[in-house]
Amino acid sequence: MSIAGFLAHSALAAARDLDRTAATIATRQDTLTALFALRRQLGHANNNLNQAAHALNSGTYPDGLEDTIAAVQRAADDVRHVTARLTDPNSEGTAA
Image (cartoon, rainbow, N blue to C red):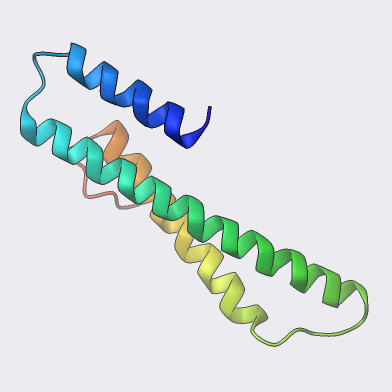
């Protein structure tokens, strides 16, 4: 599903659900915003990791590899946090 399609689907679903409060909808929007930001971060990390793998395969140790790995770890932690918010809105999103 495209991003535009997902947003349209989400907006229509929210409009049909008359029992949801404005706070619930705002929390959901914050979560969606966080997910889209994470998607961008993971796309950048994917590009960097592909370049690093190419360099390593050619016998070169790329500058900034540790930074890229740390960024991927932070993004994974952020995904866990957002997922926790989706499954338990009262959760602080900390890992078990």
